[in-house]
Length: 256
Ligand SMILES: [Mg+2]
Image 1 (cartoon, rainbow, N blue to C red):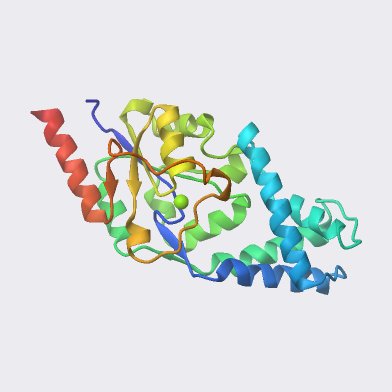
Image 2 (spheres, rainbow, N blue to C red):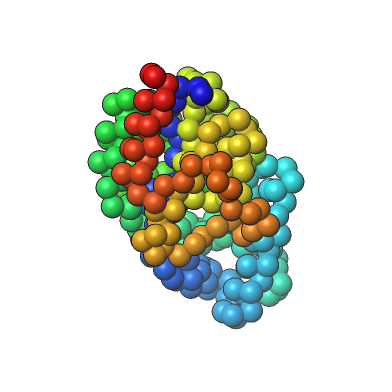
C-alpha cells in the first residue's frame, strides 16, 4: 500500500453545507434583480425554463469536462420570454452576481472542520478541489468560512475551466500538492464527480457521509445520478474522528 502523502477535499457537503432553501431563495433574488434591470419574467415559468436550460448546459459538461456558467442558462431562459440577450449582457452578469451573493452568505462549516484541517495540515499538504461555476463566489465562501489559509492549493472549476470528474482537475491537484496521484487521498461526498472521478484519475477516494448524517440535504450533482454509491472497497467516514482514525490506521499499516 502506498503511503498517504497529501489529502484533497471537496467543498460542498464535505466541508460546508448550505441552508436548505437557499438555492430557491437565491433564484428569487435573481428574478428580482433581472426585473430591476428591465428584464421582467413570469416567476414560475422562468424557474422551470432556468432549470431546464441549466441541466442542458451541465449535461454538456459531462461530455467535454469543460465548466459552464450560469449566465448561459439565464440568457437562454430569458430568450423564452422575449428577452433576446447575450450571456455577456451586463444585466445578466449583474443578476448572476446577485444570485451568488444571496447564496454564499448561507454556507456553514461542518462542526470541527477548521480544527481537523488545522491538525491535518501539520502532517500533510492539503488541497481543495471544488466544482463551482462562478469562481468569485466560491473564493468568497472559502475566505469567509476561514478555510482559505488551511490549503496549499485551491482549485475551483470555474477558474481552471474543467469540472470533476474530468481527470485533468485531479491531476492538477496532485501536481499542485507536489505528490503522485497514488499517494493522494481525495475526500468527497458525491459518488459521481468525487469518488468515481478520483478512482478514474488514479487517486484514493474516501467517501464522506458526515454532512448527510447531520441531516444536510443531499446535493448530489444532478447529471451523475446514474452513478451508484461506492462499494465496500472505498473507505467511508461519517465524522472527522473517523478520518483521523483511518489515517492513523494507514500510517500503522505502512510502518509495520
Ligand atoms: Mg460535494
